[in-house]
Image 1: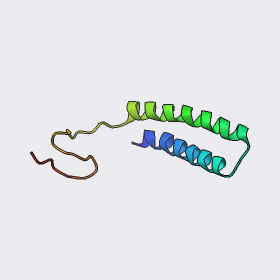
Image 2: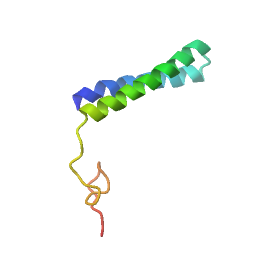
Image 3: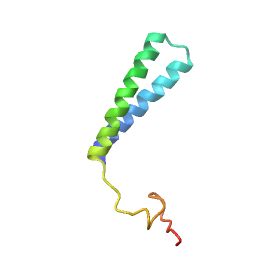
Amino acid sequence: MDKIKFPISLTSSVLLLYIVSAAFDMPYALVFWLFVLINGLFIWMVLKILKDGKPSTKQFDEVFYEDYDYKRSS
């Protein structure tokens, strides 16, 4: 889990910076390059999560939600 915290934090931070820069009329070049960067970071983040993430041990047929212990009714 520790291996995926940094990619998630970095991608989220740059996405927030992109949103703020677009909202406050920053120079077009900055907004454009942040847009390009966020797409690359997003792909990197997804690959890191798929590679280093921990798969769930629960099955969809048994548990409906991963983060809440809700049992499916048959």
